[in-house]
Amino acid sequence: MCNVNCLLQIGKSLFDEGGSKIVQKVMDKAKAKNVQIHLPVDVVTGSKFAEDAVVGAATVQSGIPADAMVSYVS
Image (tube, rainbow, N blue to C red; front, side, top):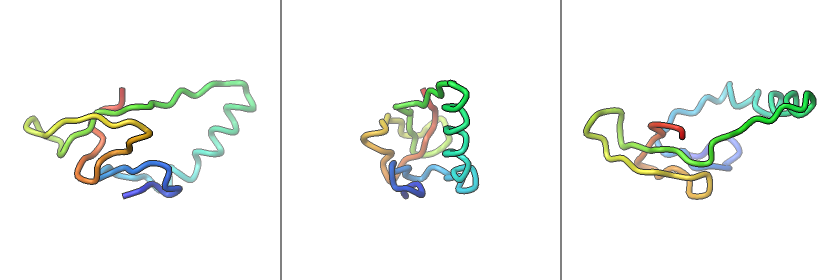
């Protein structure tokens, strides 16, 4: 699965389409107020939310594999 702008493959992660619609507004407001927003460049992935999940890592460049989801943002 890909986010709305297809900038990042998100695998099985949930996507908040409504929330995504305000991102540009928030970024523009922060810029206007000279506020830096730091976004993660890597995440811990998992095959499911369970102790026996297969864990991995992904970056903004690599995207999240189709069979994984975001488990933790570092």
